[in-house]
Image (cartoon, rainbow, N blue to C red; front, side, top):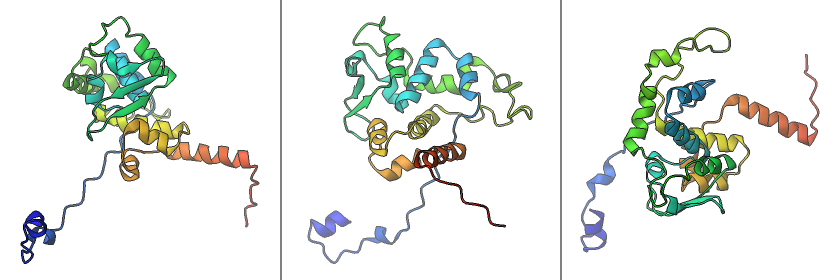
Length: 224
């Protein structure tokens, strides 16, 4: 309708679509890995899935980006991975942490030009859902939560895509600035980056304590 009105000279044309209220976007997932969940997952999965998950947490890369990686994209000397085309259609260069470099160095025995991981994108997601073949009940059995007994939410509804906001949140918790995190994750707007960031309240409290300590702020007396 807008093309007809603006470009085809149909000025009197009414665009009925403008009268439609667009539905609100669904609220994003805020699932983060809890105490002991990562360790329990890694225990039940293959060595390759261990490497995939750890690398995802270090880079905030999407599942498809991980599955499509080749050695041609990797520069261990510069500590970067160059993705020629991402979900938003743009090239992205990801800086690698020391841990991410160690993971890639352990894969050097693979032939160059081939994918770093032998698993396909769908297989990666399925492996995480199935817990490496272990039953959900078996994975959660006997896992304490603060010394109060088994946690009924332990490893419930964990998806591979949850590792991306988990990684983004961890980058913030490690003190990285917003621009560098956006460059790593590939989020083009602050709004999208915020949607993928879920900081834990206890982490914010610790950061406030560190900030106040560096500033030498004095505690105000509590009025009675």
